[in-house]
Length: 252
Image (cartoon, rainbow, N blue to C red; front, side, top):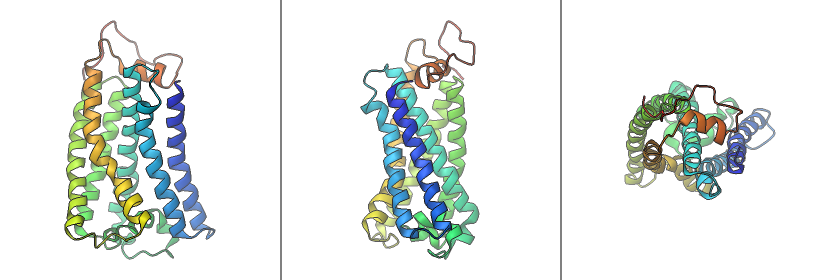
């Protein structure tokens, strides 16, 4: 396993463990909910950005196919985790989350971001529609990631690119509508505006453009087999779990 992948795994663990620990501490009443939300938001931004840039910054000694494969797996995780675990669950519970305060400790997981963008504390109809769509696109990205892991690169490319384009459109709407309203629903402090609002959403403006280029580059790689590269060269598994033919396995 390349050293840069170990860094990615550490960042991935950090992005899960820190928010989970903050949630537990808030439920126990051991930490201020706003402080915990700021720590979690900053951790998520640093971890998510780190996950996608690490193969490019620290992976110079690895083959291009390995670096791009690791980048796409990292983005696949982020594009599933955020939309499904936060967006879609908020959509399902938006009536319950509406009006939540720092005192509603069991709703902290959704409040931690919603306190920065108060549209989520009012169950704004536009947010309900966008977050439902985002969650569904997250499930589509999960299918793309599974396809990529199993060597179906072309299928992953089509599904991920389509889902990414729709997610990009939704993110543009998400940002532009609020900007046209003078950011009146965004809490005007550094963590709320820059870290949570811009930082936690900004990747969905960048990666839907980057990911298709990465997929296209891999599809042009002679003899590229995603399943083998991911298992052997990215994650250092002893052997591939599928039989590899002598030709490239890039078709769906």
